[in-house]
Length: 265
Length: 273
Image (cartoon, rainbow over all chains, first blue to last red):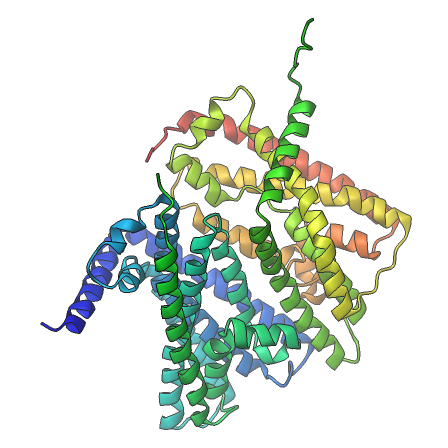
């Protein structure tokens, strides 16, 4: 079997094991469903309060903003299902010095640290996100073409890769400063900024969310495509950014591992 | 020569605890800087959204001008960090990992230790808030209507808000003694706070009935009340009665905590690592 196929099989196995592990705890499903609904509810309240006072926010209608919220919830669900649990495990490994066990394994270390954990119930957010997007599209009564829908799905995949790359890079850089468990809270705060279209932010924040932490391409651009605010061929932008982000995160990971000296002993 | 005997007293314990925490926070500068940046994001989002809505409406919504909104959210930042307490997830961790033993083995109630440590961190947060406030003021042009009573009132109200919120979180944390699914209840707390405290928007912008409900709940006294006091939207009578309500809520929540704690601690058995 080729090395590549082997790597994929390893990833699949890890994910399956993690999912099965979590599926034992049925009540977590209800807790998660409850919390996700509550979260979505407060997001909707915020939009309702804004559009109670105005018809458009920085050129965005209520239905279009609903699309942004939907993408935000969907990508957030992906993040919390696949990325965040792995990053927590990685931080813990670095703090306790147990990352050595992973680094000494023959398979690619980035792959292993990225697929070890999965919080399957957070997929509820993905489902809710899809629901909100469908609702938004119906509200907008936009004419969606097949090309539009297909490119929207591509941009969502790009968005998922971008957030993965951001989280992995940030946590890897944090190897250098072991006391940075709060980093995850900060990243969470940054992610919240994506709930509104970045075009309404002042230049410094918009710039940071485009260049430094490219959430704009992960959330705003997909929402613009599904809202018909921009042509489908704009998807080239998130595709390019996601490839670049994955490449940079790979470089950062290699750099991190090279400079990693363990925190134990 | 006789050495002066170090007598234990609660005020002395608090002073020492606060000083330790102040020094500890001072050590981690990068983390600190990052946390500040993180804390700036939430108010900036609200600020941007609401100032652009107000601008679109001719500079004012529901009687709030863009300047007042800017002032509101700039002070919000300080109140937010000031309000941090031991969240219920931390209680879950303490109980699940058996870390509570360490607290229980001390003769002093863990509440004092937590409260003193969190109170100590406030001083450094306040210092750190100044550059944030300067930066945000430079961008958003806040309007404050200051009188001396507002400044004095705020100095009390912000501690009152912290105490109320700290006690709420602390009492909520006790749920973890009974269940390992406390997160659902904590979720309700977060959502209620967001909507009913003025954390998301000043309650004037909410439907009227929400404001009517909010005055009967503790949340508003932890966010909007201290903020409104500072930016000069309240008169002396409103300030004094608000502080009185903070005291009442603190006493009530404190009583609830004491009653629950007695039962909770009987249930406690460390789960261990």
